[in-house]
Image (tube, rainbow, N blue to C red; front, side):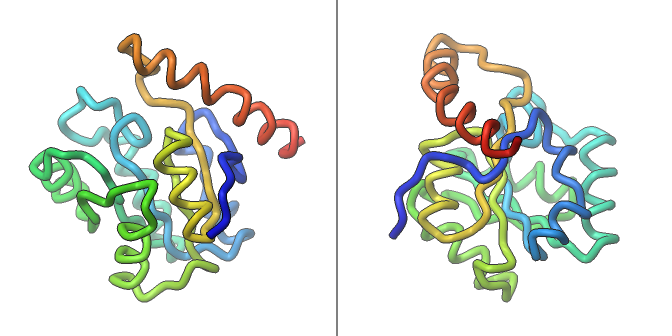
Length: 167
């Protein structure tokens, strides 16, 4: 299994991952983390901007599935039910188990899959190990706790390498 902490692309917000970009990459299945990727953890329900982005993906033939390590199955279940999207809970990232299960459920192989997340040691590492396109977003709502601030500071050099490669 490949080991890399360098994402393929870093963006500021999830909405910068457009259907056109995903099509250019051959992606038909977008796996995404939930907390700090699509919404701050304190946000209980999806906003209209997220709903519009998902509708745009769907119109372009791209399936979105949430892949979350969240220990509260209820939060993920309710958020995804509100959006009308499938989810893979207790994914165990950076293990590839959750990503592989989501791909199998969607009937899509890794060559047509991308993973979007905000953390290198879970989302990006799982994506790289699974052989899927690793997309990283700056944390929605920012790093709040001292631990999050340290974690995101440690991620900065890896994101900088990616941004230089993006040109």
